[in-house]
Amino acid sequence: MDGEARIPAAAKWAREDVEALMALPFAELIFRAAEVHREHHNPNEVQASRLLSIKTGGCPEDCGYCSQSAHFKTGLKASKLMDKEVVLAEAKRAKTEGASRFCMGAAWRSPKDRDMGELCAMVAEVKEMGLETCMTLGMLSEDQAQQLSDAGLDYYNHNIDTSPEYYDQVISTRTFQDRIDTLDKVRGAGMKVCCGGIVGMGEKVEDRAGFLLALANMTPPPESVPINSLMPIEGTPLGDSEPVGAIDFARLVAVARILMPQSYVRLSVIDRLTRFYRERKVQPYAAYEASRLAGEEMDEARRRLAEIMGVDTDEVSFGPSTTQNTYVLAQAFGQMLKAGDAIIVTNQDHEANSGPWRRLADRGIEIREWSIDRDTGHLPLDGLKTLLDEKVKLVCFPHCSNIVAEINPVTEICELARAAGAYACVDGVSYVPHGLPNVAALGADIYLFSAYKTYGPHQGVMVLRREVGEALPNQGHFFNADLLYKRLTPAGPDHAQVAACAGMADYMEALYAHHHGGEASALEKGVVVHDLMRAHEKMLLQPILDYVADKNSVRLLGPRIAEGRAPTVAMAANESGAALAEKLASKGVMASGGSFYGIRCLEAQGIDPQHGALRVSFVHYTSQDEVSKMLNALDDVL
Image (cartoon, rainbow, N blue to C red; front, side, top):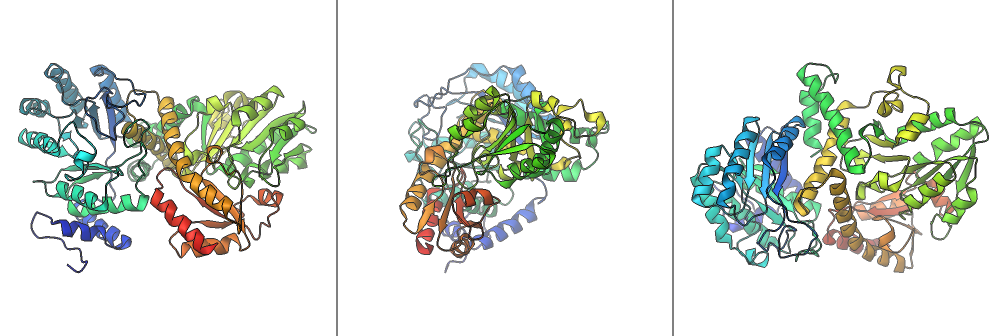
């Protein structure tokens, strides 16, 4: 074939066809996949689905990736089959929030005949709501498959998990053929097939090709193909697996699209944003449907983010950016405070949580600087304690600096501020990409972050706890003074982007459902996802810190231990940060050089902001291979 990828005229694909597709240059592969997608699907439509675990844990299978297996100690408690009325309430909520497909999953090897009546009733009543239905219950008998089909089930999900050749490396309590047998029964009963699998379980590239080949050569191929990237769960045999890199995962999805052109490849912010612009782009909160739905989606975003962060819904506000939100806050504090009152700021911060407050000196407000250690970048608590007295009304500091990256002890700092009679304003922009925090537990009065750095659209998100929000002068329209979430919003935010922020919660929910599962509150799910992200990032971060700290030609900024910092690694070298970043770009590594709006932070560590620093950073979906590539590139340029 000489490396050329061909599209066979026959229905069957050969292994060499799949491997050739996977070997295509990335840009060419994405282009071909997009062409195929546009030929068979509306490129501007994405189906929104909701997955509910209706029976969690206690599964007798030993799938090496799954926290729901009874074979492994993951801390997950087994539950009984969920009550039908609870399922229906969740389905109704899903539809209200924009889903058109509702999937119900139970952790069984196979369902008991005694449960079939209840399961079929769930299917029938969810379908009556106008939702497309899907279930995954394990292996089925012919009679069980027929019962589900007769109840109106649209899709049955039964994943093949991986390639036939690699299957026994992941699961021993069933065979690959067991999966195929159930899929045959599903087809025979007249239902559509939802079938995919997981990558990142230690398989090789040829196993991924074999996995896609097995799916594509089904007759017919599955109508729905979920492709998942494993997030390792502690306590499972695959808990130490290296995740698949973003590019490799995108490559797999693109090949799946080409191999199965008519299937839905199931992969949450973009679809919401697209839907709002296409179907809801009107003034929200009127009685007609488009307007009513627009308002409901905006409210949903606020409510769901608030639930994850442990605060009241009206304590969450949206604005054009975190910087602009901070300027509005500073305006309000400037009106409330009097000459002689004091505000503490740091020189570790991004300018957005420093400059707006420093400008209040023009109003006679005293600005006190909590300074970092020149050698370590650390903010010493003793330094804060010496600045606190009865004049201090506000303490502003970062959850972690975008240069030093040390995770500051937010709870302790907030307690010190509160004991002195001051409010605490925390800039979370550099921390939140690594997990939404439980703001209530942190004790912050104000917590700010940027949605676009947290898998969302370009909006600033501000948590304003009730006490401080009601004490500050209203900055919004006079008739909105009684609405907490509008008091610090002087102009209307972008409605579509606010609504799309619910996709951030969708993403957290999807990560929780895939890697943990089980009934839990939104706050509890957020904590689990936060901890999953942090665990993976710390594992990848420590070798990078060791490499940079041991390199004589550069200076690592911030702590050397991964436990106490975010995966943002800034370093100073003889060559400018911008020049080094340009060299890394030529080697396929995305990094930045400059001052990163942290001029005060660099100067405080003796670094010329014009010379700047080099900064590399990553998040939870970064792979070990990508980190190795970056370290090799660094070795070449430093």
